[in-house]
Image 1 (tube, helix red, strand yellow):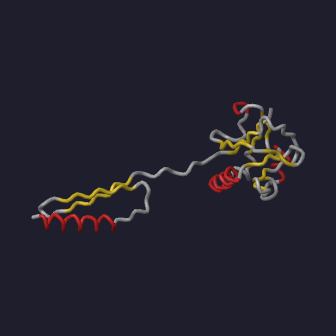
Image 2 (cartoon, one colour):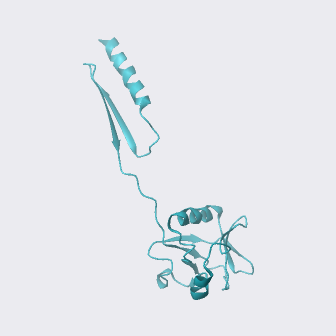
Image 3 (cartoon, helix red, strand yellow):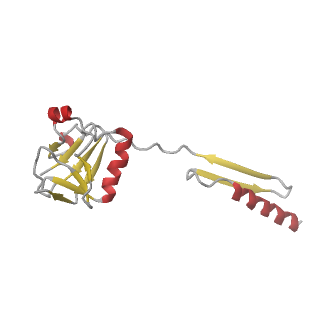
Length: 159
């Protein structure tokens, strides 16, 4: 009797090891009984969809941001992530490259679900926000989904 339980346990471990573990939301349960019956159940939960941001708000309060006609956003290594390419000149002429606001509630340009990041410093005579590399990467990744940078859905919070 003990030998059959050991065989069942080994068999259960082998089956468990064969179940794909690459999905984070999947859970696996294995049960064995003395009658040599093994049940394997895979429960899959719905995976969350990527967040679709409608724009970006760069919080520059307390840094002394100066307003300019052609601002750019850089990461901490100096790479420009917004302001130097793929922008519609006619749209820039009509609404500007970014909106400057003193409160998040006073702006609608970034849409109903904006990504909010904090500038770590300013460059170019305090006119261009610099973001951490992590925040800059977050903007580039989320922009791939909705294209809010191309739509100029950019707001700078100032004092």
